[in-house]
Amino acid sequence: MIAALIGLNRNALLSDLDEAILSAALGVLDDTYAPGEATLKELIAVIRQGPEPLRNVTLAETDERYLPAVEGIVRSLMALCEGALGDTFAHRASVAISLDKPLCIDISRIGEADTKLRSC
Image 1 (tube, helix red, strand yellow):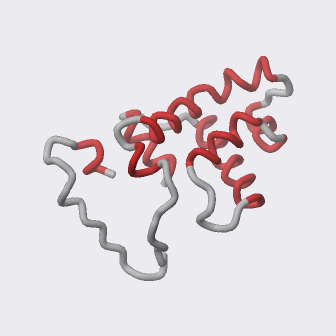
Image 2 (image 1 turned 30 degrees about the horizontal axis):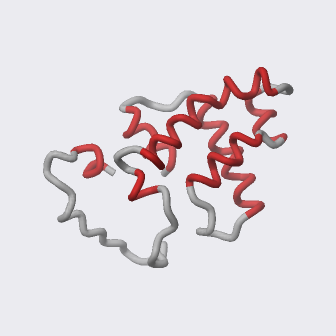
């Protein structure tokens, strides 16, 4: 889902490296947080910290190699948190979502011209 959101916001597909970084970072978050507790901001923090699983997928043992490798995905995640979609995706949900039941989201308050947010 996060890769899809980034792709929509970038208007381009993610690179294989970006997908690997996301996957490794989400694995670290799964080991650290209870389900539904981590936000995109925690994801950004994990990627910036560069724990071993992320350094392994980037083939970077030093910060001089690691930081440039993750810069693009960090910028894209920050854009989701701070950009036009920030209010939607940067905070914890106020209502618990049950993934085993149909979900209906009211988008009637989103302006017709806001095609990016409507596409999400």
